[in-house]
Length: 287
Image 1 (spheres, one colour):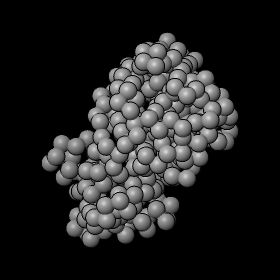
Image 2: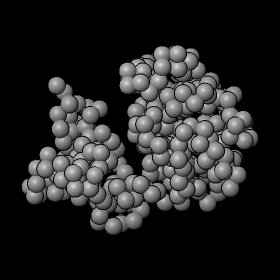
Image 3: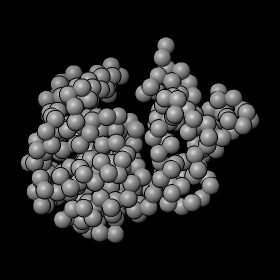
């Protein structure tokens, strides 16, 4: 299959990342079926897509006709069998290896043998996901960035088993979606998180040590380095639980102390302070 032949995409998971991927695909003219485990999470994902498209209209990024056309291309379901006829699958479930492995086993039995199975994982080994399928050459990483409708980057991750044809295919799909793709090897963190996590951890450690306030840390980075937001604001956006998980994955693989998560980060996650999604992280979003 060629990138231009893709007409229908299946997205497994419709949380923060999954809902954004669904929106990106629908706005690019593709029919999208997304799968969630429960009715509540399916409805929440649909509502997130609708809110995001409404904001795009408000900001002049999309007209009302375009919004309506995009929404008309989207179908939410609780039954994974509803992606049996898709031309590409993008998995975007929680960053839990056992859950992802189960999803890939089921998808491998369900969709056509020629269909590429992609994962949006930010840290999991692609080779392990490929190993539970009968199509390891067609398993690949397609790592979008938050929020997918805005961020232009797509990390394409090649496992040892991924074919060159699969890589070229997903890069072509990425181009159809309006993304600029970069190619990375199957190593924890890929390009961006490998560089980002030590920076975020150092920022949290700086706050924990009382070296500077959260506001001054963020302002220094914004004005001194030209970043759109400071590191602590960014961790709140990513989710402290996600940041902790990625730190642990990187530390497990490389055993380098720069990837070891700060104590403050671990305690905040234990307390349920997860950032924007919980209403409180390094900043308070409940008001």
